[in-house]
Image 1: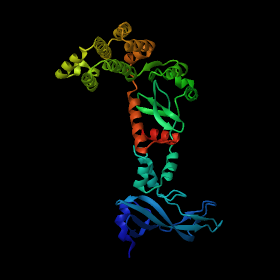
Image 2 (image 1 turned 135 degrees about the vertical axis):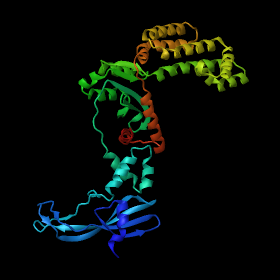
Image 3 (image 1 turned 180 degrees about the horizontal axis):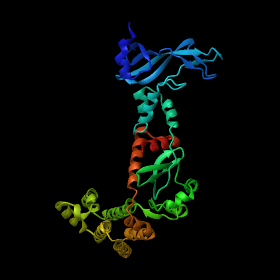
Image 4 (image 1 turned 90 degrees about the vertical axis):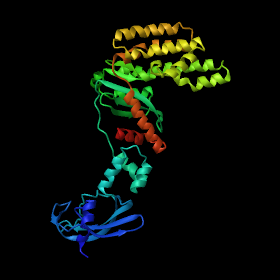
Length: 394
């Protein structure tokens, strides 16, 4: 039969440099038999042109799935012999890398799929490729070194890898990009990593965003002397949320069973900004606050604290913040007194959060992506593989 009967299949599969000789379709597999047209080649040893064919060999090559079936290219490989040095060599194929049993485009598709939030097992099933092959391709992915700009954000996430329970993520908040992933958050690891960055780059950093963990602040003071330390708003605001919950839980222990259940189920009303509550919820909130002076006090301080973010003048924010701390320290509520001490100790970093327009919001967004990746992969124990997947995702 004439070979051009497969012309449209050849165009559809973009196999322009080969000729299709036959197609065999089985239950789950498609076998496409291909060969190339003989032509002159250059000997890789002595560079002598030759058209002399030595022999033929058949190779089965995995390609991208076709019509929901596994696709294989059965290539009739032609080997040439050099008349000068007698070297035997195979002809070159653009669609097939040397020593590989899969097409180049299949490798590219695997690498592209690794940039999505899917598990390696999922890619393996979709493309009929072993997980070990995918991991070998993952190891070939590398990333160029980065240059620090005027801001850097740092946070930890629970990676549970072979390197430890927690890993560190470094983010460039201006460009919304991940700079790097560190194996752990220990002082030794952080010091070793940041000391490897040139002092010239580190002096460029003007803002260092982190949470309320002292080792981060200590590292920033040593390696980023020009940077203002900014405590992320979410991390110090949730301290107030925890204090409200602790007061409510303490009071619930003194309540009758039915009232205790009501307060527990209606706790969100106390946490929400009062101005955003509906009329019915405002009445419910007012009724709940009538129960105890401590609950009214901490709710009042919560509403006062939340007004800081709407104040445009930083000097007013600073004055109101320290007034808030004084009020909390003298209110007689143990949970608030402890919180006030914490806020006073971290006051510079907290106030910088209101002074400068930086937060760890983008970092938390990346952390959420990492959690999804871990969930669909049922955990990734190898730190190098986890780091590569995260950087490839961003």
